[in-house]
Length: 450
Image (cartoon, rainbow, N blue to C red; front, side):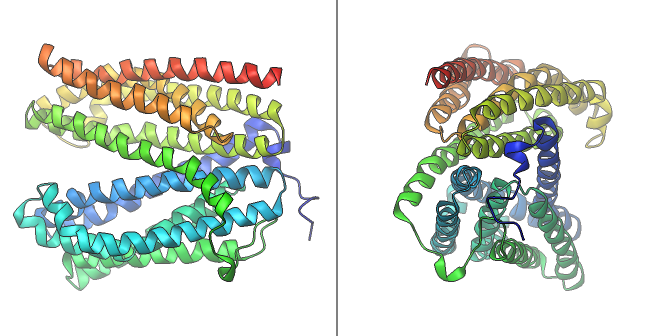
């Protein structure tokens, strides 16, 4: 067995474009299966239990879960960046402290959220004005989900750590396995045993437990620098401070993005059912781009993190440029595809001509501007990889979130039209992208002087 010092690290030494793509595709597939995983419960209960059960699983409960898991995923990114830097520097002690601290954070967060979630579920659902006919099932689903949220946090943290070491394949394999388990158990509990929403929740809990066990078992086996020991899981003050400093801003970004999307949805809802239906269908098509964009963002964060830790600033800059060019090319192809196939794609969701017409108009207005968002995703990911999270957070929250809400509050009074609402995306993306370019160039120049 090679010692850590002799093991070649492809991310810090290999051909950048090749290693970037090899790392990117498993993340992309993992994002796809994560989307599939998240929709299985809704599809099965909607088809075999009824619309009330569907609303219980995919309505207020889903929004609460998205907020909680999104925030913790941001915290996981803080842990993954620190571990990527230590891994790239071949600092075994610091990397393992980061690993065990991350697991302590997941365990503590899991216990806290389990207790708080089970106790606060009725109040949270009432706050979101959950319909009375879905309240009972929503409480059951959400409480069971919170009962197993420790497994969700452990899997997210463990898979983020594996990706930080350059391993994006194993998290994908485990996610596929658990997705299959969830489908089988959903069919068994909901269709065969007629357990309804409770069956879907229990199936999800079991699948999440399996995913947590698999990723933890993997980290407990000797993996180059990293080795997880359950007895050594504890907080390390300095590492905890660094991980929280990097992770909390990203977590807050996720929460505020959710709030911004709720504001957009509220504005869209004022135009009636056809517009709401068109926007909902568009959101499913929109997910194609975000899967790709998110995968590139995770990939560049790991690449930059490891090379930054190894002191390879030349590869930090080159990997950022390569990732930006590849992402622009892939996004350009996606934009052309979505525009060319827009009517066919919308007909997959509805046959209503008005809904299709409105949806196609929406798509034409916003899709070409996705190219601009590529700049935000890649540069923000690259900056996070160097440990710079505060300024990217400020740029994103100011340009994308705050400015968009201000835009909405103004245009809904001055020009309350669908295009005016949709223009909030390209306008805020352009402002944020320009800010990222200016900040990245200035930081790049300072690093060259130093």
